Image (cartoon, protein in one colour):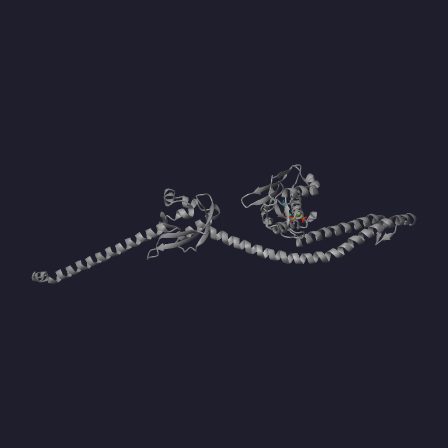
Length: 439
Ligand SMILES: Nc1ncnc2c1ncn2[C@@H]1O[C@H](COP(=O)(O)OP(=O)(O)OP(=O)(O)O)[C@@H](O)[C@H]1O
Ligand SMILES: [Mg+2]
């Protein structure tokens, strides 16, 4: 009806056009409102989701290449201990919580994201509000408009500390298995070599002692000959000179052979440290007081500050007292060798650590310490920095093997120039109902 009237006004076409435009605008407006509503709903759902995400979600908003705002989802408290409010109140906090050693990589990757370049997920440490170090995996996603202009970047941080330590434990286990395998093969090889070397060496030792005796008996005869006939040559050397040399040569052979004998004995202990059984109930303090007299001279020569701090009523450990004494001697010997002057001290302490429960023995010295690059090699067979002074490098590998066979742990902490601590942890034997006899 209306249409007809307007047509009657004589301007039907223009009006028609205008009305169509209005209708189109209205339809567009309706669509815009609908889209807005959908968007609002999506945003609400996203915010809702983010609120319940336990991971740490963050957004860094950028305008003209500059950070103009940051948003930290509520999950941040689960990962870092800090709340969204903490981050809002303290804009520096975000970077300050990154572990100092990892700040460089975090800075580099943020700058990369700011330049609009994709960043691969990366791992770094943060310092949690409770002071502990945590590992996080940081994933950054760039948010660009349709012209490729960077509007923001979003990040997701997951706590991977447990994952990381599980991976490290698995890695360590793997390395220990390889090491154990190597040690077993080495043990077989070593015991073979020890056996092969032992026989000819005994032969050398016995014969040198015999030759020495012969030489002592021959000397007066040669001296008389020299007195009557004048000087003569022995292997091209005048007798007057050779007389002293030959004695030194024979002593040298005996000394060398004794050294080989010592190495062979150590090699045998290394390949069969379990000989002797591990079924005694051992009082570790007793092992200490039995071991000390054996190296008392070396201790007195090396230090005038030797302290013993033996814990009272320590529970017994199951094992072999002689082998444990051997370990204590090895550790004390190394401690003595590490000292540069007698004013530097050695302390041996024993105590009970209820937590595990373990009996702990520590030998602390104030000696030269161990270089960090040597620290994880010192228990390797034949590793020694004392080759010039007859070190074989077997003391600690034997000790390590013995403690391992006792289901215990031998580890070292050291600071160059300040000293070394050797720490033995041995599992405690549950109390026997009848008390048991202590070795
Ligand atoms: N308390 C210590 N302070 C400094 N260095 C140490 C200490 N204990 C061990 N080391 C280092 O570890 C190396 C290996 O020790 P290990 O006892 O196995 O062999 P060694 O003492 O050299 O020879 P030996 O077979 O005669 O014991 C030593 O050569 C030394 O470099
Ligand atoms: Mg040693």
